[in-house]
Structures are given as C-alpha cells and as structure tokens.
Image (cartoon, each protein chain N blue to C red):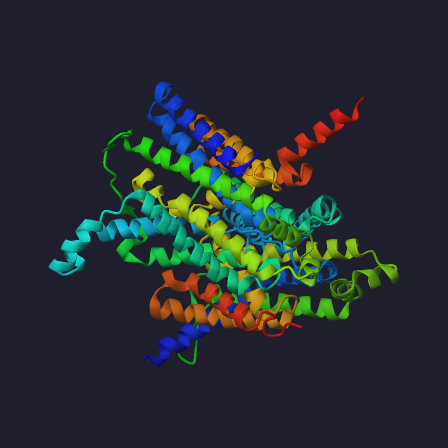
Length: 299
Length: 335
C-alpha cells in the first residue's frame, strides 16, 4: 500500500471533517435545545431537517456576490450572518406558533421542515437551473506542501475558519449568559421559566444562531466543491450520521464524529471510488443506532 | 359497512373507471390514471405508518425503488439466462422467465417489506426522529448501491421493453392500469381493515402517547414493526410495475424525490386519521400535478406540492377530511 497516498487521503479527510463539523454545529445546537422539550414530551421528534437548504442558500448568496463583485465567499458569508440569524428567528417563530404551541411538532413539524427543504430546492432550481456553480478566490487551486504532504488550500482555509467558529460557539455556550441559558433550556425549560427567563426567546436565539452557522457552512461548501440545488439532500445523511454518532447536543462529540466521518469517507473514495462515499455515512449511522444510540459523547 | 361489501363497492368502482376510460379515453388517460393510482397506493401505504402510528417515513422513494429495481433485476436475468447459467439450467429457467408482472409485484412487495423490517428493527426501538432520519439516509444509500451495480444498469439506467399488446386487455398500458386498480383496492382494503381492528387501536395508542401505551402493556415495538413492514411492502408493490410502465429506469427516476414528497404531502393534505384522507389527497394532488405538468412545467408542479404541504400543516393540520368534519359539526350545531 502506498503510504503517501494513505496519509494524503487522511489529511484530506481531516480537513473535510472540519467542514462537516461546521455544517453539523448548527444542527447540534438545535439538537441541544430541543433535547429538553423532547424529554418533557417523552419524544425527541423535533429536528430541523431543512438545515441543508439554508446551507445551500448560503452557497448561492456567496456565489452571486462572488461572481458579481469578486468578494471573497467567506467574507460574504460573515456579512450575511445577521440576515441568516433573522431568517432563523423568523422560521422558529412560525414553527413555534404553528406546531410547538399546539403540541403537534412530531409529525407535522417534521413535514413542515421537509416541505421547506423541498420548496427551497425547487425555487433554486427554477432560478439557477441544474448547472454546477463555483466561486473564485485566490487560494482555490493551490496547495500548501508541508513535509512532503499536500494540504489543498481549498480545504485548509474552510477548515481553519470552521475550527475558529467551532471554538467560538463552544465558548459562547459554556461562558456567556445567553449561551448557558441555551444549555439550560435543553435540560429543563420549566426551571428556566421559574428563573424568569422566557424559554421561547432563548430557543429563538439558539435557532437563529444555528441558521447563522449555515451561512458560513454554505460558503465553505461552495469553496470545497461546485454546488447544485439538490446537493443539500446528499448532505442530510452525513449531517445526521455525525449528529447521532457524536451524541445529540454535544458539540465536542460532534467535532470528533465529523473528523472521523471525514477521514473514513476520504479513505473510501480514495480506495473504492467516490461513488461509494455516500454509503459510508449510512453504514456509520446504522452501526451507531444499533450499538450505541446515545453516540460517542452523548449523555 | 362490512368489509366484503366495501371490497365489492371498490371493485364495482374500479371496473366502472376502467370501462369509462376504455370507452371515452385514449392511451394518455390510462397513462395519467396509472400515475394517480400509483400515488393513491403510495399515500395509503405511507399513512399506515405515518398517519396511524405517527412515525414519519422520508424514504418512500427508496421503498418504491426497491420494488422497481427488483423487477429490473428479474427482467434482466430473464433476458440473459443463456449467458448466466449452464445450458440445462437455462432450459429449465426458460419455463419460469419472463416472470409475469403480478408475481413481480408480490416479489417487489416482499423485498421492500424485508428492508422495512431491517431498518425498523434497528431504529424503531429509539425515538421517532431516528427512524425518520434513517429512512431519509436509506434512500440515499440504496441509490448509491444501485448506481454502483452495473448488472441493473448502474447510473446509465436500464431498458425494460414490455410487449406492445396483451390478450384480453389490448394495449399494455391498459393491462398495467388494471393491475394498479387491483393494487389500489388491496391497499385501501388493508388500510381500512387495520383502522377498524385491534391493530389499528394499538397504532393509535402509539401515535397518541407511546410511553402510556408501553406502560399499559401494548407491544409497541412489534406493532411498529408490523406497520413498517406493511407500509414498506405496499410501496414496493407500487414500484414493481413501474419499469414496465416507463420502459426505461435510471436511479434518478426510480429514486425521484417527488415520490417521497408526494407520499407525505398527499395524506397530510387529505387528512391522516382515516383511509379516506390519503385517497382524497392523492386524487386531488395527483390530478393537479398531471394537469400542471401538461400546462405549466414539471418543476412548477413540485413547487405547488411543497407549498401546499407547508400551507396545510400550518393552517389545516387535520387536512381536508378535518375541515369537512368541522364544517359538518358546525352545520349540525345550528338548530
């Protein structure tokens, strides 16, 4: 076996894992929030499966601004953060009023998010067509050669930025008042209410942050690979495999799981061909569900 | 209404539909009618798990494609018997192949039911969301497998050439249409039987409060597995004749997202608590899509379905059946 090929595949996988971590962070926050409500109802049935749709919207915004004005996609996504936060808060408000308040979130809430995912995809399809879209930035195409191993910048830059984002989120959740309130609402919304904090407001903020991360993730996605409207669906399996493997609601677990999946997938596509890669996430998902449903670091 | 009478009514209705189409319609009406009936079966199948038990299946397209691809597989085997087997075995197998479509439907149903059992066994012991996610991923992975499986055409797709004419029925599409009517009758009868049996009551307890049901001694896992298998099998059965209908199957058409979306949207819009809801939803949405595909475009009709789904789950959570019941109650309450 060619050792260099193996190591390069592992490096690419780790860098790809960084991107997955960024993508999954958004879901993971939301999972952290919903875990509490779910325990209260005895059901963990509220998961935003429309998350990939927001990521793709982020990709297309980065694409439009990048091709029209030539601004770096990551800068675009950072500028777009407040807009995504507002979008997330709005979606949560609709979700809360329509489903959570009426106690119907399990079946209809899922259908609602599924509908959102689908409508977004079809709208993008109608506007942009089925062509692959990509962005242009000075660091795309070249690689950093370190000790004879290749670190492509198109993977390295998103990796570094997403690690920074991940660290920021972890600090925010564990140190700031709002962040701690977010963690608290996932444990016991009733107790939070007794402390005179409005759980709905906290959840709205958390959902807004979760959607805001989609803006960054979208920019990373279009730097890493060309994007078409249906690409979001391919990521659903991976995203949830990572969430489940890492343990729902655990950010560190998510990071480990994302890096792990990135490496395994990269090895699979290096040795067996890229068309097999999507099967990896499902295999891991099934294995986790069968062996340890609470995930690596789940409670 | 007693079940035999119900079946008789369905048969009479189905026969009337067929004769009407045959007398006044052309081949296009049969093609369009086939698609609508296929959606009735898919929506009814989805509702057995989704509506009765409250477990969301996002992988309808996957189960549908299992049925479609088991037909493609057996058809391809039938085409290349002489290459695959020794002369003696091939000679024997020529008596069996080509397998008639009704038997392919049964095989497709069994395959999809088995996959449903496997997925369900791994994920249904956990909370509902894991099952929903697993079904979503299942469709993606099955597609990956088919794309990499050259025998059934891989990503290029496979041609399935049906005979042009069949004895008694005439054009092949009319034969398929009649098969689909029979499948619809089977699906609706099963859904109605379940609804009125102890099984249906068990399903309803799971939907309303699984913890309480478990505490009362309802064997929830077994009931959920039964629902998954029946629902998956019916979807597979709906998919098995698909290659003969379309003539050319590729992963993109067999795993089309519109099956997943429609089989959720139709019961949600019609109403999920009884067999009538998916029927109404599928006929309305299916016909609407056939009209929209011809008059506007096939992408636009998917947009319509998605928007209707979102609109209905927010505004009318009980669907058209619920709206109708509310209206009747209001009307009765008036002196």
